[in-house]
Length: 148
Image (cartoon, rainbow, N blue to C red):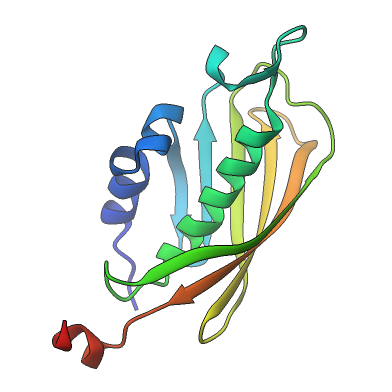
């Protein structure tokens, strides 16, 4: 199945309000893999003393990246996906730089998808956070699409 990269990019960057607010930009997209960039700005700060990223924003972006990985396996815009579990391990404070988050497929079953995510500062190699997302993923079959 060929993925519609333009549609996924437009949906992720322009249609989802939170992504648009954060300035999420897809910089790489393949089946089962996505890399995004989130620019640093004052609205993402959690530690105002040191201008460091808020951990909740990092977790939110990681969850979004896991979802974008899932869209590369979608069969229709009516497919459904919901987060079951998200685990994030914070490894070091994210400084006042753009954040890069990569996500990749670990396993895709009939209803459950597992992804692995990594976050790091732009231009750096040391991880800021790593995590795993588990999603309930219901893909409609072509016969189901005709019924709706």
